[in-house]
Amino acid sequence: MAMWIGPFGCTKEDAAAPRARSGETSPAIGDLLAAVPGDAVALGFVDLDAPPWSLLVGGLMPLDEDTRKTLDQELREYVDRHFGVDLSKLQYAVGFVSGPPARAAVLLKTIDGTLAMPGATDVEGGKVWRVDPVEAMSLAIKGDIVVLGDDAAVREVLETLGGKRKSVITENQALVDWLRAETSGAAVALAAISPEGLPLPPPITGLERVAVSIRANAFSAVVQGDDAAIASLEKLSDEALAKVRATLEQSHRAALDGRLPPPEGAIAIVAAAYGKSYVARLRPTRKGNRLSVRLDLGIGGTDVMTVMSVAGILAAVGIPAFMDYTKRSKTSEAALQLDKLAKNLRVHHIVHAELPRGATPLTPATPCCEQPSGRCRVDASSWQDPIWKALDFQIDEPSLFQYRYQSDGTTAVVEAIGDLDCDTTPITYRLDVSVSNRDVSATITEPPPGAD
View 1 (spheres, rainbow, N blue to C red):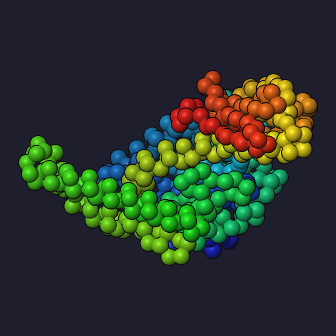
View 2 (cartoon, helix red, strand yellow):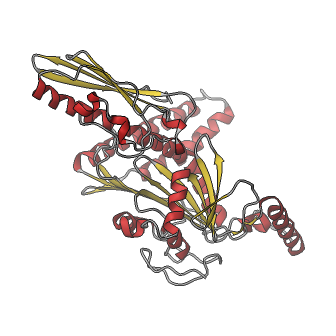
View 3 (cartoon, helix red, strand yellow):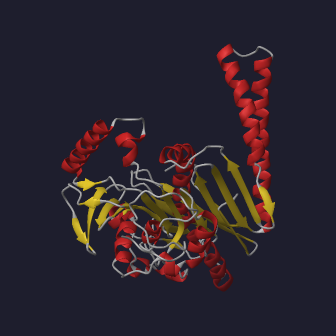
């Protein structure tokens, strides 16, 4: 039995038992949130009415009782023999992103058994397997919880479960409250709050929080931010919807005029009718600094298959976007540090009437991908070069980039070099500084999109 009375206001219930959706989030989601480290900046969950296992053993299409029981038994024995775990009760998941530097993991509940895979290490009462050394991905099992993600994030979850770290429930109550307020009772949900001290890139500068939720019969999203950010997002939304409407109408007109082959024309006519209807309902509503949209899908029932179908369609778009956001959050380190160096160089020039002369080697000397978890460890001794000391610059947390400096006194170049995927394809952020009539100008050049 699982019990968690907290942000979602739920009461005691059997976490693995199928339930009728009551507008509340399962206590099992609360159990998983309590294991999320306190520095999480984004949270998501999957809260299904019944385990997907039930689909495999008779839910996809009707089976007679004997066939269903035989399938269930054979599948259980096969999974146990090859994997060593019971997945039949697996029904809930929580994902999180924390940082910077960005780390992410997914927690799954409920499982029984121990994974039949060699190479496990004992960490905080759980078992950890390194499943992808290149990407520093690990999988852990502790009790009935499975954790999969960045090695650092997985270990932080185990430390949180063991009481060595504080949970997001106590450390970031604002994020948990936002998740509760906007997504309670959803089958699939995501919520995020912009972390302090980490500026967002255009065009989302100024956005403060976002929440997305999927129910069997509706999709909803809400964004909050400052006036300029919400106005910009509203304008972008209107422009995008206008383009969609124009494209649909163009195809519709071409079909009616006979300029499309019959099969394609029929599809265009149907797509125009449904598309225009959904586009009209997708226009967000603004109320103050809040922009929201709700799309009623018109689907009856709350069965697992319906939710998974809707979630699958949205995931096809959302997952690549999420991965791109994760990678962008990693690169923000370089831009922030180079911006700091630009400010320090201006101060140095005001005091000394020139930029520090000379050059530094790559610092730290050892590439980050050759260090644990693919990150450069904190080492104050790496930053003792006179130039770094003159600029009052060093990295005080695990980092993803190495830095180097070169200057003749009136111009300077600083580079931040990193291999975010550890695939031997580095990217370079470059800071160019020049002095003219006592004015110091600085420009940061980012690598081209998709360079890493």
